[in-house]
Image (cartoon, rainbow, N blue to C red):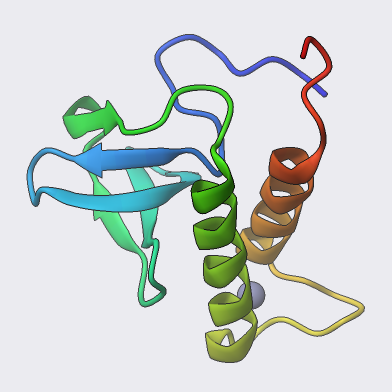
Length: 108
Ligand SMILES: [Zn+2]
């Protein structure tokens, strides 16, 4: 897959929002904001990209993968838009992030 650009977390990465001191799963950008999803599930919130601090670097630990999966499951329960045939943008991002996080590292 394509490399992430410098200065932005990878989608699915755990980041800390310095403004609220909450840790979330980076979901991508929405306009000028970064969208973060609580690792324990719940509503996404908007953060300023400059407030994001990496909580985990490139390769997620097993615990992080679990959190990612939990966020994924939670999304499927909460989202009113997703269908099995037509996942919403966030669902696409989450399932891709789960897939990439669980794939063995190529360089290992
Ligand atoms: Zn959805």
